Length: 146
Ligand SMILES: [Zn+2]
Figure 1 (tube, protein in one colour):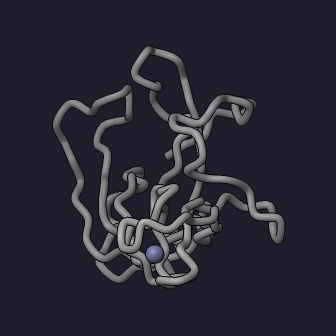
Figure 2 (cartoon, rainbow, N blue to C red):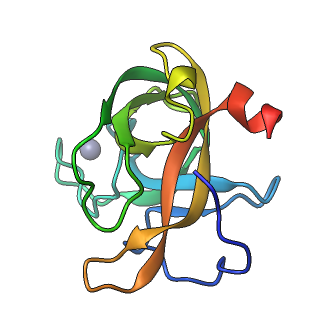
């Protein structure tokens, strides 16, 4: 997926699902963690679904591997480019499996087990026609090639 230059100031399509890592300035998924249960959740849940205790916000990292995916060739929702891809990513930092938009610019790069990293670009709209930033995972090799 191609980013539109100069649009990094757009709002996120949903608040609190990604941030910027203080370590390297790259985007990271934001979720929550319940300390007593030692479980992470995405998207963030203010209460732990397991024990109903309060959770704290936690960075869930930006890297993982594709567990499963599909490339969708029907008319995309929310102004997304066609085709678009979605799938499950197993996050390296915590083992959590998250459902996410994937980079479909080069569908041949999408394969089960491929390492991916999080990216954020202006993509589609927020459902009311306003452009917005949207996180997606892209194959690490495809990133290095661009
Ligand atoms: Zn808990």
